[in-house]
Amino acid sequence: MKIGVFDSGIGGLSVVRAIKKELPDLEIIFKNDKHNLPYGSKTSDQLFNLSKPILESLVEEGCRVIVIACNTVSTNIIDDLRKVINVPLIAMEPMVKPASEMTKTNIIAICATPATLSSGRYNYLKEEYAKGVKVIEPDCSSWSSMIENNEIDHDNIKNLTNKVCEEGADVIVLGCTHYHWIEQEIIDIADGRAKIIQPEKPVIEQLKRVIERQT
Ligand code: DGL
Image 1 (tube, rainbow, N blue to C red):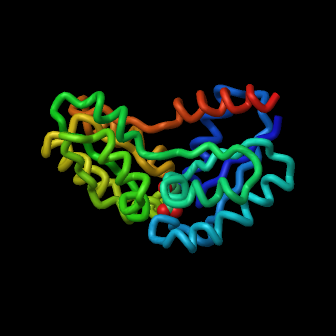
Image 2: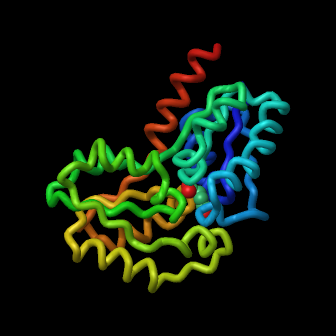
């Protein structure tokens, strides 16, 4: 079966890599929108107008399921996209619920783009699943461009990771697929003080279920 994966940039490639490892027989078409990155500073209208034609082209090219490998698009406009794109769309969003269940200090950190952090969906997840949990939202606004352009500011990553660990976070959520590329660096800096989680595995499980229904 042919599936599509979409992101603003190379964040989606980390998801493609994870899907290929688990489901090597799938044909995957990956599309990004590098030219308009970062999506994390865009409005919902802008995100919709940019994403829709790309998703339509994936459908035209025969994709029967599309993974939206972008937390920013998923948390802001997934409902609007589902109304206009006629194949199943699998969303990726920050793992607020699992992090809230895992934390022992009752403090978690969510690393995500500004547009994700201000979205209705993300704030719903916090209200619903992180009641009584302190949620730290460090400023990662430069990270997706920094990673996309391979201009990694190692000091910035180190300072930010140390800061959230020192504030007591014992779970750090990677709520932007670009950050998957620096996951190991964050794990090394956290050095056991915090668990680092991101949603590739559950998304692939969801993809398997959707594919099963399609065949
Ligand atoms: N990779 C995207 C995400 O998961 C957004 C990166 C960006 O373009 O700002 O949110």
